[in-house]
Structure formats: structure tokens, C-alpha cells
Length: 435
Image (cartoon, rainbow, N blue to C red; front, top):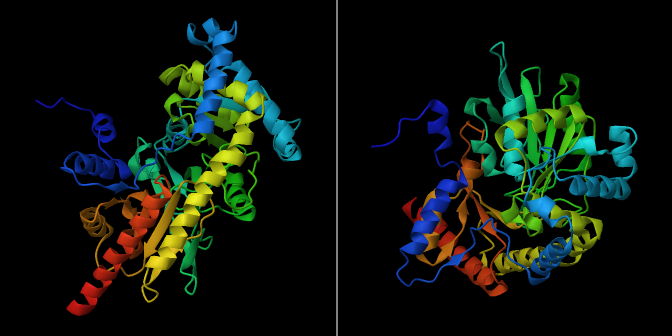
């Protein structure tokens, strides 16, 4: 007999977004019966030897430290492990100087920082603190200013109808088979009914990087209503620095700069970081105290060593970024060689993250059907329609896109793109014959 669930229990026990696809992928791999798959669906970063060694070295430092017992054998502050909070404050003040001073007066202080059990938890705290129903019964919306965006945003609000997303404009270079999403400021609405704004930069799944001007314009639209703009910087500099185009974090009075150490090699330790005005940080810290006390102190302690020594920033720039940037180059080169020139395929500009985003314009079958056909030739990618949380209006584009992970070998990526090109050609050809 199934357990009796509350409305929230039923909602939170559902598989949402890409997680439903991942269930199908796991079942496919288990039932493969000897079939070899090139699996380019993963959001898990690869274990790079230099990165793993960094965390081994930091662990050795912690084990040799008199602080070890205090770190792992005692509870800590809900705000975070003090040496990590201090390390982040010192690093960001030194690294970004006037940017932070302009936002927080005399530079960032410990009270401007919160450490959470991963950034997904951080967004759960935030959207349910600032979005949803107010005590007087008003609905405050959680605005995603540019869709597609991270699929995980679709399951974090306890009031699902509070989440609203806006279609982008598309810059298309037909000759180069490239395109880029941009916020459509003629449609974007941030009002007294908005509770908070949330977007990723660089973006999972597209690799899109909003410009400084676009970020500042969004923050300016939110400023009159005294609401926070959360910038999901899980792929941003200074670590893991998975930006392939020049970008600098943007700070401001109403901006919450949100980071993660997952793509810097610590996904298992669940470390999220929020930097912002104390009034926002205090709300989120109280939420955390009620929900989980604090994040893992072991992960925080070794992260403090890596940041203070400069090793984390160094390895982000010299190992992590070039590794995935090279993978993107392999993918786009392979697509250019394999894809028929007359097909309307467009690769999103590779500006960051560990994914590529492919749009097959006017694809005559759905993204789910294409995904199934691609599995038949031993390639697994992720249908794109799972990456439009909050965008309820019908839009054919949602069913024509795919997220491709850059976590395969060069040979696997090249082979997968060759097979994908053949499946795409057959799909368009089949539609032409039927017509």
C-alpha cells in the first residue's frame, strides 16, 4: 500500500525535469544486454587526476591539523565553517576589489556569506523564502528571465505555479550554424508581484553567458521592488572558471552571487556558497538552521585550504577550464564535419559550462522521439524539453533541442556526433518523403 502523502509530499516525491529522463537512461543502460552506449547525458563532472590530487592534498592537511576533531566531531555554525567563510571573503575582496566594495561599502565581510549543502539547497531556501504566498495570501512569483535554464529550478518551489519563465530572443547565424539566446526585455516583467529572480551564468544547459549589461539591466528592473536577484554561478570564475568567454561576476545591493564547488571537484561534499547583502543572507541562514543546521564541515575545511593557498583558482584556470573547452571544440568540429550543410541545425555558442546545446530547427519528430532513435544507434543525450521550467506556453522550439554532455572521450564525442548527424538526416528525409 502506498503511503498517504500531503500535497507537498506528493509534489516533492515526483520526478521532475531531467531526473525523469535519467530514470529512463538508467533503465536503458541496465537493459542493454551487451549493447555499448556512448552516454553523453551526465551532469556529473569527470574525475580529473590533478583535481582529485588537490583534494587528497587538502585532506592530508586537514588530517594533520589539530582542527580535525573540531571539524568532523562537533556541530558548527549555521552560517558555515568560519575559516572557509573568511577565506572566501579575503579572496573575493582581493580578487574583485572595487566591485565588492561598491556593493557592500567597505568590502565583503563574513556576514555577507552563507555556506549551504550544495547550491540546489540554497535555491530551495531562497525561492521558498521570497517566492510563493505571503502571509496576506498574495502570490509572489519566481522569475526566470531567460528560458531555457537549469532543469532543477522546476522542482524547488513548494508553490509550483509561482515559477514563471520568459522566452528569449534568438540571435541566429545561419551560415555558421550557430545561435545564441538573449533576454527579451520587451517581454520580461518584474513587478510588485515578483518575489525573486533566478538565472544561471554560465547557463546549464546551453552554455550561454549573459553580458554584464544584461545582468545589470535585470538587477535594475528588480531594484525598485527590493527583491533579490540570484545569479547561479556554478560554472563561473573564479572557481571552477568554466567560462570560455571573458566574464566577471557582477555584484550589487540586490544581487545574491551563488556558487558551488561541485564542478570544482567536490560534488559529493555538497558545498554551495551565497554572497550578498546581510539582510538576504540572514533570512537564508535562519531557513538553513531550521532545515539542516549546516553544510558538511569536512568539505568546507578542505575547501578553505584550497582557496587560501590559491590552488583552487589555479587548477580551475589551468586544468578544469581547458579540459572542457577542448571537449567543446571536439564536439563542434565533429558536428561541422558530419552534419549535412542543408539541414537547419544550430549549435549554441560555446561560452561555458560542461554541455553543448543543439537546436534542430523544425525537427519533424519530437525531441523525445529523436532521443529514442538515437539510443537505437548507441548514443544517449538529453531531450531539451526538460529544460524549460516555468515556461508553460506552447513553443515548438522546446521540442527541437538537446543537451549534450562534454564528459566523453574525444573519440566517443566524435563518434556520437557522426551517428547523431545520420539520425538527424534520416528524420528530415523521412518527413520530406512523407510530405
